Image 1 (cartoon, rainbow, N blue to C red):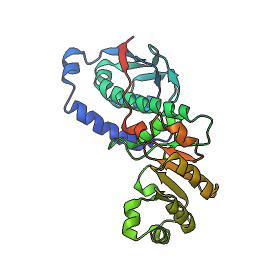
Image 2: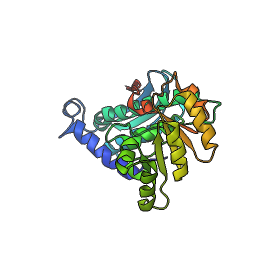
Image 3: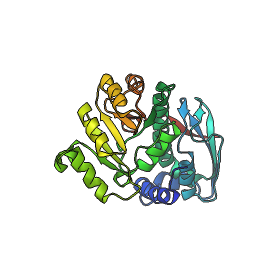
Length: 278
């Protein structure tokens, strides 16, 4: 599981502070302090599961002694109407944690499900689906993890995970070769350097400069096929820009190694999950 549980615990405190503030007024008034409840997390539509461990951590933050029994794992398909987790514990605590837990899991499942659709579209090609940094501030770790639950992979977690030379970096540096030389002179030894190219002559230049990866940005499929021929498998090629469900197959079939899609995190819709008395 590519999650830092220490960091998640810090985030859970922030999420609960935002929602609860001083205390859950409704639960305190309506529910006895020692009341015990048993709730099931139910899929109200077909979902690709992601975030089950996060839900457990949120409920346990409010009631460390609660029991959390999950019948499904992240990455598995859950049918409409299926109960995939049962939580038993202090009723006040579980009701207070309910909305934060559901919000996170609904969001993560939405991303996992959309990712799975994109992955299915490129089955049979050699291309691998990547995410981007187009994530919700504060939720990047969870949203990128959700991508992996749907069968995708992470491009980079943050700006410190690799050097990506985009058009503005290249313009400031005075060209691709100058930008790459400067990057190589300062980058840590294990850091990869990727260059964004939107023309075929830039592909030649980037290849000559000795980059590790080339991103083909908003190129036509014909130009990408030509870029694949130019590179000849010497370094990986990534396709980016204008990638949708109805276009990704054609882009993957050009022969690129990776297709990055911002929509799987930026435009995913939350699924419908309920917490019901059982």
